[in-house]
Image 1 (cartoon, rainbow, N blue to C red):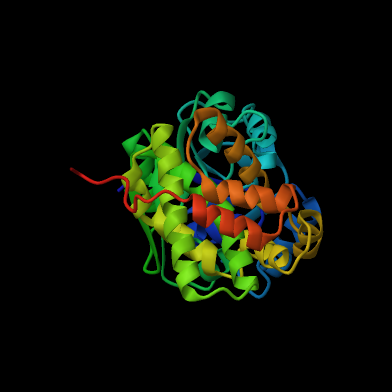
Image 2 (image 1 turned 45 degrees about the horizontal axis):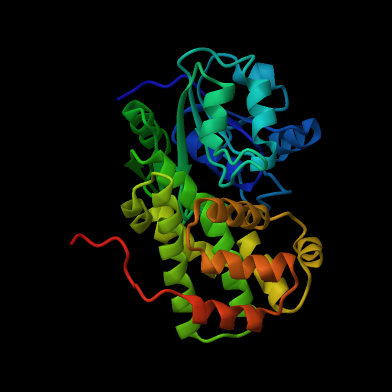
Length: 338
């Protein structure tokens, strides 16, 4: 059993808070860093992150801070739980305080605009002295905070990172599985946001269960096709980070991407939908980036193309869906052992 010193979670949103609380409940010294000094003080006093996890009592051992340098001092493991748009900036700031050999683990599910870099690749660029991993899976923060039975995947090129993360997070309600395919796990987490928007559109338009099953199944095929072309293992998509995360994101009203889809299905524009949801969902920018990359690599992505036409070119959903169904290829399962 590895003895851990100080664990740091960077990012005081819903998932960062739930993650830090789990680590504290497992008896480890953990600091939850927030950019807002005011919110850090409020959370420390009330033992509740009322802004992101209202009603969830936090473990008394969990510490809060807005001082990045002090938070990272003597850290053994650092979780980066911030959105992709803020990821590189924070990693760059943290590089001044992270020492050699520290484990840094991304929880973000996105792709960097302009570079098409995944979050683990950003960590490797900004923190070359660290050992890098990612966690991804069907992990709704509020359910984790309420101790619903949940599982996730940790992926790293370094087996020790996987082993240590499993020890840190595992509990009677939270299971952590390991995977060496970091690329596949991370791409799955980013890509599923696209299809959650499409699923929200179908729900808003009250399409039948047959339609939903087609959508989810073809989404999985499209995700694995794209990722395999980039070098990921398509079998990864049969696990929690693939079909597991896709299912929960495509069916849960707690998903921001699903909420965007619901709004689009009622006829709102992408800008109107974003205002209504109150947050920029990762799937919006991911759709644009994946379409551009798929065209460049000549990867067949009919669902991505259809959603792009709806979101950015204003084409009616019904028209785009009909075009997609007529254009879909006939092969059901692509990755078969012949």
